[in-house]
Every structure is written in structure tokens, then in C-alpha cells.
Length: 296
Image (tube, rainbow, N blue to C red):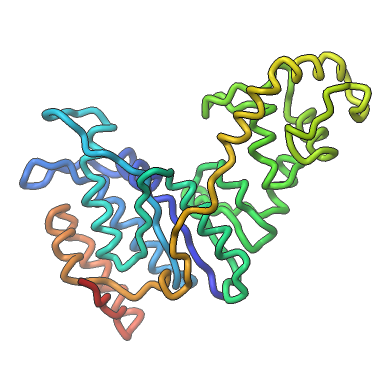
């Protein structure tokens, strides 16, 4: 079964910053997140079903000013080395500039789901925004922390809508953790019922008499009328871009092995020398050894 794994690199870097031990190298640079990133991506590569993959990163501008112990600053300062770590591991890198990593993952999922040579696209993230990319069992979302996979059947049983309706659902229900206000008085059941009859927010009738039977529908219609423009804007903003100019050809996503020279430089700077022991055990177990990546 040919799977393509699309990894949310920004999430992985933040997770490693908060979950892995802090470490300053001989230069005084904080590199703990990169050390963790090397190990978690190596664990993914060691999985039996991983042969094609890409890692997408948000643009993380370099931190300005002097020394700072603020988490955001420490993470941004590790971003260049994190990107080099991905390259050294022989993984296709999708660094974003004007867009978000989520948009890159959504673009990859859209491009690959129609490829007959791909059996499954696995989006590795905990960001539920990516649920809108799910299609049947062809495109799924994997939470690597909880080791849970969400396909369309699982999504529908939880939300009672189609995955591609998620932006409209969030526009109606809201998501405080994401800063999305929602329409006052609208809850999950009301939103799911209405979206089961109408595809999107812009198709919801203004007149409550045209709605399916719902408790308090006159009041709900009034609240929607008062907040419709805002809900439409939120739906547009919550919908991920899936048309970025990324090269999603399978041959470009194939993992071709470790770039030992490049990896040695990253490991030395991150002082992640324990990585070599894991690599050697892997190579001894799965001989022949992973091929080296021939790149400049």
C-alpha cells in the first residue's frame, strides 16, 4: 500500500520545544527543539509504511534583538537549523513564505488524492483545521501523539457533517481556542442540521419559514441575519488554500535516504550525538542500509 505522509513541521518543532529537554550547544544556541525534531522524524522514517513524505513549515522570521528566553524567540531562532535537519534526513521540505503550513498540507492532499498511484494520504498533525481535507479513507489525519487516525466515517460520526463543510460549521458554532466567534445561540446540533440541508453558510435561507423544523428557529434566524456577513468572512478565512504552486509529484516526495554529510553537520551543531546510535541500529536491522541522498 503506497502512502504519502504530509507532516506539519511547525507543530512538530513547537511540540519538541515544549516536550524535549532544553539544550544549549557549545555556541550558546538553544537547540533542544531541533534535537527532538531529529528523533521524532527519524521515528517516522523507521515506520514500515513510510516511503513518500514531505514536511511543511510556516514562515518563522528570525528573532530580532538580543538574547531572550521567550519561547517564541527561542523557537524562531531554531527554525533555520530545523529546516536543514529535514533536508539532511532526506525528506522533501515545503517551506512557506506567504502562506501557512496548513495551506501546503491542504495543497498536497488535494493534488495526491486524485492520483491513482497513491493509496492513502496521511496528514500528520493535531490541528483539527486539517480535518476539512479528509476524503473517505483516501485522505486521513493522523495524531502521532495519541496514535489516532481520523477518516471520513470517524469525522462524520463526530460532527454530523461532511469534512469539507468544516469551515462553515466553525463559522456558525465558533471556536474560542482559534479566535472564531461563531453566531450567538448556534450550537453544534443546529449547525449540523442546517448544513445537512444546505451546503454552506451562504446558502442558508434568511427566512426561518424556509428552514427545517428546529426549536427557536425564528430567534436563530434573527441571530444569523445579524451576524451573516461576519460568519461568511470566518468561513472564508477558515477554508484552507489548496492551490499553492507546490511540486506534489510522487517522484519528488520519495524518501531517498539520509544525507550523511549534511546530517553530520546538523547533529554536530545540535549536539544530538545519540541519534547515530539509533541510525546504526536501524541500518543493522534493515540491511541494506538506507541509501545516501545525492544532493548539493
